Amino acid sequence: MPSLIRRFALTAAAALLAATAAHAQVQDRTLKFATQNPKGHPIVMGMEKFAELVTAKSGGKMKVNLFPGGVLGSDQANVSAVQGGTLEIVSLNSGILASQAREFGIYDFPFMFATPQEADAVVDGAFGKAMHQKLEAKGIVGLAYWELGFRNITNSRRPIAKVDDIAGLKLRVIPNAINVDWVKALGANPTPLAFPELYAALEQKAVDGQENPLSAILANKFFEVQKNLAITNHQYNPQSLIFSKKVWDTLSADEKKAVQDAASEAARYQRQANRDKAAGDLDALKKAGMQVTELSAAEQAKLREKLKPVVDKHGAAIAATVAEMQAELAKLRK
Image (cartoon, rainbow, N blue to C red):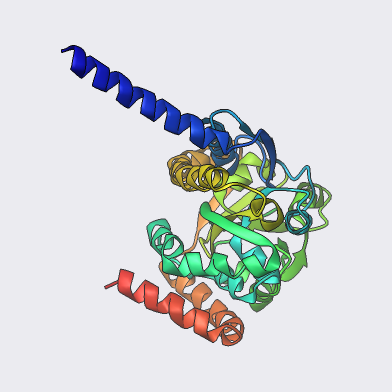
């Protein structure tokens, strides 16, 4: 029995020594993490989980300070800061990264994904990883994909019961070409605008409406300045969790592992949190006074048809990427 106890003690000591050695390769660091979404949003819930995991996996040596609500500027400003090494981490719509690698525009194609699970399979697989690798030449490391979700249209002028009701509305869009074009294709007037400026623009009637997932509409209190909500599910947004390559290259292997493992683990948590909240978010928006309409199957088909030329136009410039995505989707839909 004493020899058994001695062996157990030696094994425990060896494990402790290994853990101590690993943590010896981890320095005291504080990382900054920014997003446009406010506290309480599922993206920020994911950030909080990520910060907790990084600290745990680094033996308490690495801390993550969170900057939600666009307090560090627009997505574009955050990307520049990541490239410059003054900001370590950002979560943003993957399509915004088309300004760095044009192939990322595919993530903004209307009606690309049929379900969140379909999106998970594509972005977590070889396709999604290869896309993130395209960012390294731009000074960005892609860690994981989180989820914003399916987008819907709100406005302060009228209910949207059919596609033609969208015509003439002045809609805020994410500042990139494909979003400008799909709004134009519906006869509406696109207004590219950074997210931190959106609430004020809606309140002052500088724009009639906007489009975002239910979680963003609720968390940002757009119901205070928008009366009408149309469930269109016209676009699904994965979110890329990106890290500054300048800073990444200074991390030890153990530090990189702690950050990467935390990003992947937090991705699973964040997506589930977002999906769990979805039904409750719609109920909360109705209780807040929003009038909710849903397009009929015929109108939804009409919406898809009107947006198809936009997909064809932007797909021509990234034909190989579109073919790869379609091949992945075809496998999943068999």
